[in-house]
Image 1: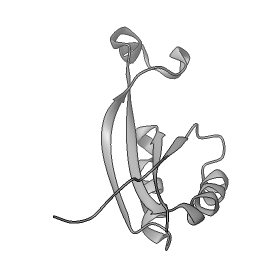
Image 2: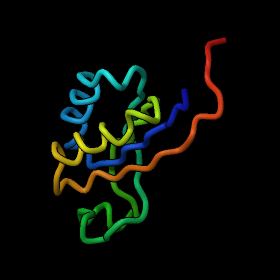
Image 3: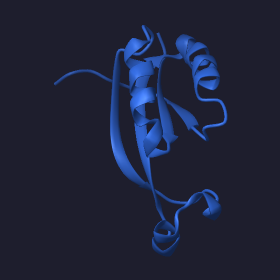
Image 4: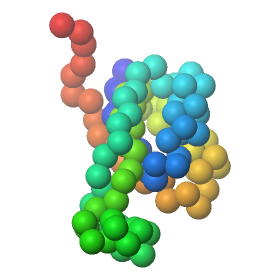
Length: 99
């Protein structure tokens, strides 16, 4: 079994819908979420205060799941969040466990 860490980055207003979607997904057993400062992106997407600071508020979700389930989950997210600007990337999980 190969595991993947799927990172999801979106606007704060997407947080509850995104978390609800992941909580209902049988493919996602473990994930974390946090409010963060997001850098980069298109300056027009920032409000005036964020433009001055050079960063915007965002939510970051990290989900560990089986690589075989990633594409199915991404297809679901594409449908549920079409046009939302939700970004994603994935990285292999080299090791995991409990201590």
